Length: 223
Ligand code: PMT
Picture (cartoon, helix red, strand yellow):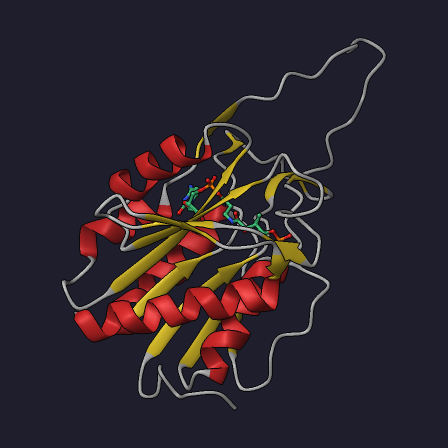
C-alpha cells in the first residue's frame, strides 16, 4: 500500500457509459468500458478513502472494499449522485454520460411495419449532473470532471471546468484509438481553475488514476 493520503475521506466515483432506453430490448449508449472510473476507484481505495463506485453496466469486476451502486440511465446516475454527494468529501465523474435521451421509452418492443421505411427518434437533453452538483456543493467539497473531446481539447476543457464549477478537470482526446475510450492506457491534461495545465505522459489508466488521486488529496488538504 502507498501513502494513505485519503484516509478518513469519502469519495464517490462514477464509471461506464449510461444507457438510455428506447424500448424493453434497445438502448443508446457509448464506447465507455468503465476502465478509467474503476481505476480511479481503486486508486482512491488504495489511498485509504471510503469509496462508492456508481457504475453503468461494464464487464469489469469492482475493486475489493468499494461500495458498488449499479445504475443504467443518466437519470439513475443523477439520482444516485445527488443522494450521496452531501455526505461525500469528493466526487470524480469519469462516467461517459449521455447528453441526450429518448423523449419517450416504448413499453413494448418497437415493431417494424410494411408501411414504415424509417423511424425517427426524438431525443431530449439529459440533466447535466455536474451542474446539478455545482448547485449543492459546499466549499469543503472537491469535484473533478473529465472532458472527452475530439477537438480543441484545452479550450473545451476550460469551458467545462468553469461551467461545472470543478476543482480539477482531466481532458482526454477521445479521437485517438490508443487512449481514451476502451483501451488500457490514457493520457490526460489536468486543467485547474487558475488556468494552469499539466499533461501527463501516455500511461496505463492505473497510473493516470493515481496521478488524479494525488491531486485530489492535495485539493482536499487545501479546502
Ligand atoms: O470508460 P473508459 O473506456 O475507460 O473510457 C474513459 C473515458 C474516455 C470515458 C473517460 O476518461 C472520460 O473522458 N469520461 C468523461 C466522458 C464524458 O461524459 O465527457 P463529457 O466531456 O461529455 O462530459 C464532461 C463531464 O461532465 C464528465 O465528467 C461527465 O461525467 C460529466 N457529465 C456529462 C454529461 C452530463 N449530462 N452530466 C455530467 O455530469
